[in-house]
Image (cartoon, rainbow, N blue to C red; front, side, top):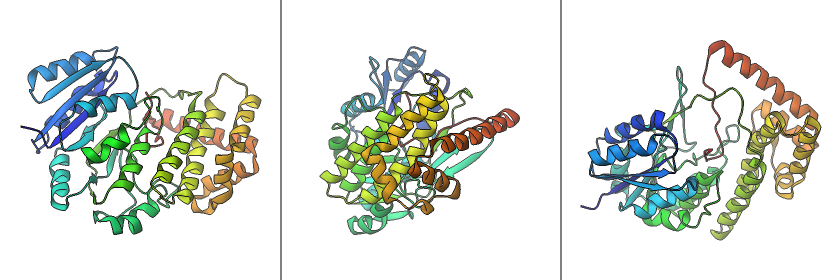
Length: 361
């Protein structure tokens, strides 16, 4: 029997968490689904764990391939999937037992192209719900245009998107996801969720938003030392350009939202460069940031947005970005980072980073 839902799990070196992830999918009260485990060239025991589960359950299939990144891995799983609806689960995360039963029921009841839910952030000793900044319920195209699209990338609360860009808190009709996902370049390694989720929402005719935090996002403990990505600036600019193109193709006037989205995450880009680039001295890092702020797309966004739409500490930094007061920016980032490190060391908390609708590989 053809499954109604295909659950695709991209796997890459997550042996520590993989079994818990798979058990949470197997614990679903919904039963009409298949699981596709796509092993992206793992070098730990993840591939063996995948094979063991496939031998035990006839509705689990495994694909082993050379490492090619998350975009290619998601495509590989999609092309092998048979379900009418597609869902993704990261292999170090878990889901609520009621997730798919509830979301598929809403999809069928409302003939929805997309159903999305909230996310539970698990920080070890503390849990927090990350919510979509739109009301729960059913949206036809008219309501999407008036109530979802105007807040999709900028929800008005500290510049965060109104709709969580993750693919993992959604089920999406196969034919809706296909043309967007397969058009995404394999080389995209930053913001790949946003590049799929936002265009799919614009293409959708019927969407249902759930209030429940069904997707459980574990804040994986990491080293206190931030892993610097020397390509992050270029990846982010590429993401903005591709989103601009996707919106233009769909005749969506998202320029204002994109400006806020760009500025909000530029704070993270600049912080990454100033604090964690150990390859350059501080003067050279500041020069890199200066050139970044000179980029036409970044400069345009800074000119158009109103800093008072952000919370005060970010509004101050944005005003410094506008004036290219990079030394003062560094001082603010440095002081905040110093206190965060003291707090972590004192309380032993997990460190986490909420990235731009994507994950690091």
